[in-house]
Amino acid sequence: PEGSVPSLANMTCAQAVTALQSVHLNANCTSGAYNNTVPATIIISWSIGNTPNPTKAPYGSTIQIVPSLGHQPATVPNIPNTYTYAQAAAALEAVGLTATQVNQPNATVAAGNVVSTAPASGQQAPYGSPVTVTVSSGPPQVQVPNVSGQSVAQATSSLQSQGLQVSGVTGNPTGTVTSTQPPAGTTVNQGSSVQLSTH
Image (tube, rainbow, N blue to C red; front, side, top):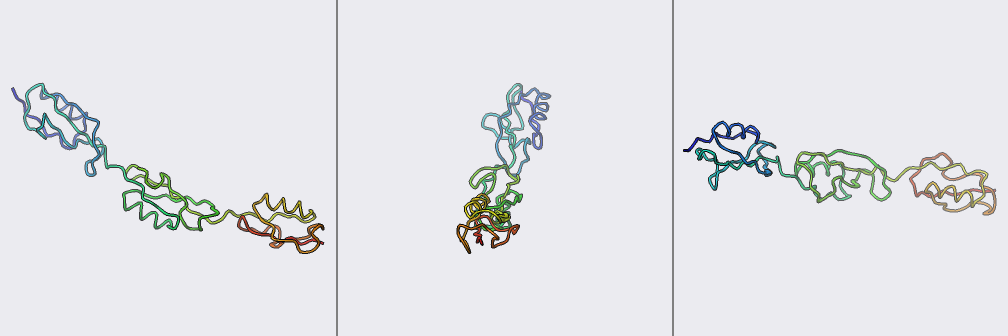
């Protein structure tokens, strides 16, 4: 004897199992498939043998059910270091991802440009998920330390420990440092040069 198979549209697998049991049919829920229109867990299709969406089936037969895994993942697009955050966000939105900005100092990438993304370019991310876009806030900043009273060698060491260079010495190269240019306490980019003055 055959029974009629109810429509399983808009059901989850669990709901379909219950609906089919009530008409003496079995359900086999597969691991599912991505579907860009059917929400996750909702059934995409059901079949018996090679018959899709059957309306009748012999009692006791098994209906194969394919639930949706949701929208297929998106691939993070290539986002070069020349992109601004707005360009990166537009590129991510074009493939169905969202962008979240994080600022971080960077000595090599210009301020306002993208340093990296997480997940990285070429990696898969769940559709609609956020991608962290790290944007350069420019080179790291440091304050020029006060090296007055130190020898040129000590002052040079102090400045280098802060990531600064010594561009030269005005005055006696073996004398005591009296001042720096830029002056102590000035905020400068890491890697900047400082001129020492001695007496």
